[in-house]
Length: 420
Image (cartoon, rainbow, N blue to C red; front, side):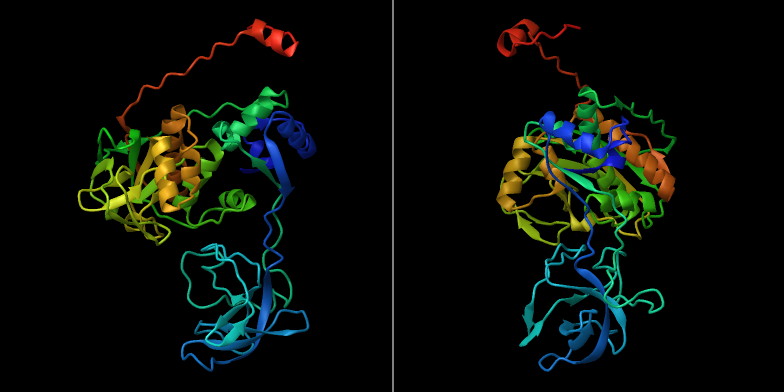
């Protein structure tokens, strides 16, 4: 779990510096593995194509001589139609991890020619959803050999969260621990009042053996999905996550901020009758990672009567995915069985951020709040009209009280603590 000092201060009023924060985290059992930036500077450089010619063994590929400012010309195989002599672009060297698909670059033999890196498009760099050809840079603004990404990010604190501390898989949970340790005051969550002026057209049916106990949802009509504003992009980039679009980025932000995974569906791609049920052996599902998974019995599925929309608590489906063209969304905040989540994700080899949290347990009391907060931010950034909030399944969650014997504590530990 990565968190920045400034993000912590969204939830914690404190005068402590980052060194004191790190020390206190270690003292309360939240082991800090490292403190550093998620800077990409070392691997993404401004480069110039000296010569681009046809690949000797492939009609649609080009073999480029690339200057990265090191004094040595590198051979890079490129399939972009705009790769040409004199073009200033972005080079990813061996060791770079491409933001779009997390591909790690290495020296690769492509049709009999070694390629020492990759020339990148804006889409591959995570700068746009779609792009044609490799990035074209202005020679007046960029210099060959310089890092393409500016290092504006603050240090990220990387904390090792043990399975029993799922409450600290969100920034607020970490802030709560620091506050309890005397390092500041936990800031109260804002009260959210939504202006709900349309009816929720969606009906959710939860089968008894589905592995989902509660499903909170709303409908937002007439949005304009956009590129996220700078503050939101910076939040995600600071902890190593790539911005995608406002709607997707908002759901990721709330997952990281409050440990509340959410999922947004393109409402125009699905029917208004949503069924949450257990999978049947042999069913196939095309996920957001573009992989098709063959399911076993018992996985929790979010479905319409005709198709699978998502693997509950693990990963969404490609058929209902959000794009910049999305106009209406169906927003979900649900509770899933941790054991079922863990078993199916392990069988399928999926390790998503949502799965990581659901299998460890999430706070049911933040389910509705997280949905409301997401709807509020989406409405602010993308516009649209918000429907009423609907809760299908369990809705009355009681806080558990743990009995603590202070006398026994003193007997074992040797220190006396006051009873309150």
